Length: 557
Image (cartoon, rainbow, N blue to C red):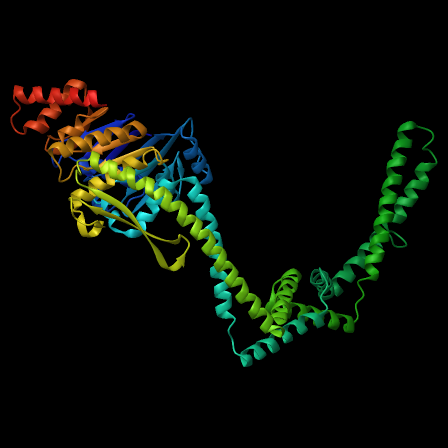
């Protein structure tokens, strides 16, 4: 859950720190006090867009930090897949905002924006003022059904996706295979030329490396021969060479080596040196023999190396890649030489994959409809709980005109808000306020399916009052039993349900306006409820009403 929020130098905020708790966290305050700034700060920390005017006037940078405690094993597993690991059970998201750029960090390590957003999607879900508009898009309806349907549907869908991918690849291959006979003849001739060129070259593994080494020696032959010959003269030649002098030293020392133990050891060491030098001279003499190159040999080496390099340029920069290319072209030649059989096999593969796709997609469809029937009843009950008294809710299924990775289903939420009216798509019936409550009903149903622990609702109460507001507050409290909920509200009925209540205030001190946020005690929470209920003048009656509202909320919870 979201444990701490730290904001610095953003808009009217100088610096604030908030410690949230479990259950329902309510934020209230006067219009313009800065509630939207608080939520906007959270959005920024999660990777939202920002403009330089969000920075507090005169500040060089802004800072937002969110610290989450992570205990859910599924969340931890998903985080590990992103190479993110909680430290002592906590994940801290930090975003430092400067003019023209920002730096994002997770547990102190700088990360890309894509990583920040991926981690955010695991930890928190923000339901903004306009998110309910997403219900107007049919594609989102099927996603809600699948999320409710759970692991069994997910596994079935993965199978459908895999077969659909194979089917599309085969379709593409079939589409590209439809060249006419003259084009196939041209391609066959060209492929045969390439394969013949590679085969006739009779390449050998590592041949290019050996030739390049030999060619370098040839190019430096004169200098190498001179150096090797001179070195041999110094170490192993006749006359005053190192080998000759070592031999003399050994013969002299051998005459006295048996007279003293230390001399015997020195004699042995010198004998080892003599043996090493003899071995060296032998290998140097062999190398010297191989340093003699004829002009013809140099020409043949250079010619062969040029031939290999030419093939590398055309077909791959190594022996392995050239042979891999040759094999691929040979396979294509075989296809072109037996084209009718190839086309027949390709069409058969497409037909078989299509049948497999339809079989698995139909299984997925059957499972979806079974789960959708359960979801439909739960949402219907949830809507009734939110004071939709004559509501009818249905999940309508139709078959898609084209195959897709989601299967053959096209799902659509339909609703009737008044008795006697036919169910129609949400876009044709529901207003903004009604859509907001429908979304809340769906969120409540999905609460036990949703792995995201922290949910934020921004002014879910827009356009409602009275009994409906009371119903919404009860639904929020219900979600708060399964999740941490952070809610900005203007309604006393919702605020009364708070497990933790925070007041957002705007104060002007020394000609500077700042936004502050305070946790409220039980007594102060009642006073804030009275302010919401009573407006400009708070009477004893209003205070009493606020107390009763708070007591009633406690009984309901």
